[in-house]
Length: 360
Image 1 (cartoon, one colour):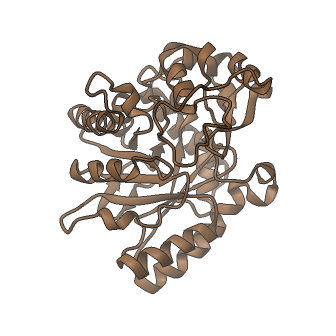
Image 2 (cartoon, rainbow, N blue to C red; image 1 turned 45 degrees about the vertical axis):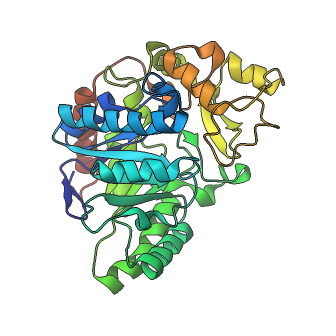
């Protein structure tokens, strides 16, 4: 695999670990991935809930918690650290400002279009900005907006297909539509971005995400124009993953037909592992009394069957009866707990094997 360049950053191994919340990818997983030469990514979703010992105020606890996770990651690695920030978060601006103040290497932002993200940069900021999109059209829109309003172009794009875990950037009816599969939208996005690369004489690499599980998958998607791959599901069943052992076992115990699409309270479809909690939701048995955190802009708690952040927090802590595990389409392929180092070794070997099988 060739090194990935994002702005002035050089990433030795072109693998980005997906940001997974609540609490699934924190400093421990991120620093382990960064040490192996990839980009380790902290998810800031729900940090106010994870850090209630720092402050009773959710917003303040989120800021303090994010600072702690970034600093702990820095203590454990000299590699590249990123933070994933959902644009749908009500404290989105606080999280962005905190990342820039802490000089995080990269901000990844999706779950909506981060149309004004560059406005938070300061003259001495080195943080790179990488939007997460699901179409070439969205990538073009962001490029046009950022260039005209801020004289800034994205440093890279993550292009996420419909096989990803968690919240998906597709309408429910398009998830299984072949026209939206990753192998289609990656070349589409590369083509759209090329216009800006040529016009402004700079490279904007595409990072492919969603359903990528093996080194062979990485090789195949790179042949279609991607310069790197983002993997989330593959890193969940590692010693270093920040989730509970029960959460990891949910992956190991899952079967292919148990990976399902759900309708999330935040107004987006999502992919998760079916369990008793989700079965109860489907029967209408979970009714929230109130919204304790007001963490997502688009969440309509009055009509929601449950509080999404509470459910994800419960799963992170190991209470699978009170929550569920988001996952990518390949979660059922996990068979054991391994290490980040072993996964990188396997991915490299698989990539080399596929490249030998398909010489240019």
